[in-house]
Image 1 (cartoon, rainbow, N blue to C red):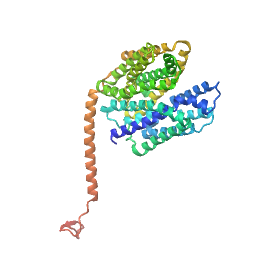
Image 2 (tube, rainbow, N blue to C red):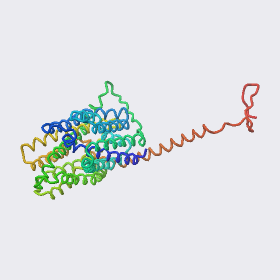
Image 3 (spheres, rainbow, N blue to C red):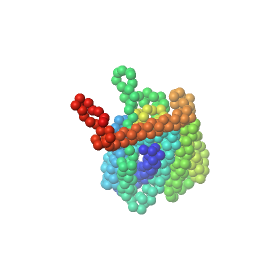
Image 4 (tube, helix red, strand yellow):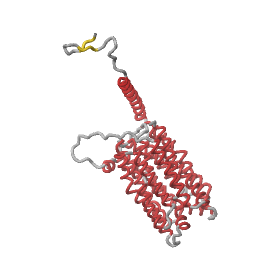
Length: 456
């Protein structure tokens, strides 16, 4: 399949995936209280439990699914995840108690992994010279879905109730399943090169974790997701403080959140293109430092409009972190390891997503909300400094100019090989279909008494 066709299909899938997720998750506390009639004294407990259990199960299972995508097929893992998530959303709209919703979230955590599976599938098709822009486009699609979801979900919940939102989300995941099944081919399975070393082969997890570049990427993405989810729970409260009123707080907060998402959707492909041109390591360091510095500055405004403008600019910095990390995973791993590598990366993000809200709630209990921003931003700034000085030499290599030229050269060679192979197959098919010489022709085979065949 042409890689551009695969990118277009997967980009649409990612928009549906992200918007379906975000149209439900922000409203789960309201679903517990209004639809499932949870005890007001236990709503917060149930909210924490249903969030944490999904992250925990996902963190455990993501590397397993990643390894299976390498061994069993990447398209198969996309189908597995999308179909099971569709089932989880469908059941989420049918539950009648908080305990049932908790069990559905366990299933959702078990089914999770559609995003890394999609990245792994894309990596099997994209040329090396187009890795940066492809990862940027897919990250932009993920962010766009994150913008559309809460707005659409809020309207649906207000108009029809939360159960309808679950059913629509299940339908969207069913569409992803069908589109993947009928319109994307399983990429050719990569055969791992034989190694002369004797002895037992190391597990793929151990092999990747022994890679200093992969360890650094796991740390970067885990801490980044921790910072994102550390800030999210307190953002609405802080916006209320800046406005001085709680009137229409959810709507106003949604708009402020969307500013960051819009910036990220616009900037992610640009970061990807810059990474391809100047090196993904460089863009990773710059985006980490820029995002951290901008988050630190968010405690300065005392009114909402400057804070919202800063939030937009923060999105410009954040949107370069994950595409650069995803691109480096593709560049620094063998094709037979990429599913496992993306699974580990997703697991690191889920661990960060579990720690972030807990840390944010703890900090908000003891210090003023404004000071959480410089604390969070300092984590990313420190991470960028550590990355700049402690990154392994292999991670620092500029994999753009030479790689891009080599990749283009390899594309030409592969295209020529494919044309030659097709011509040979066409010739063989033509020979097989050609009629055999007739016995009535001028040169017919005539048997003679000596047992030999002579031409008359």
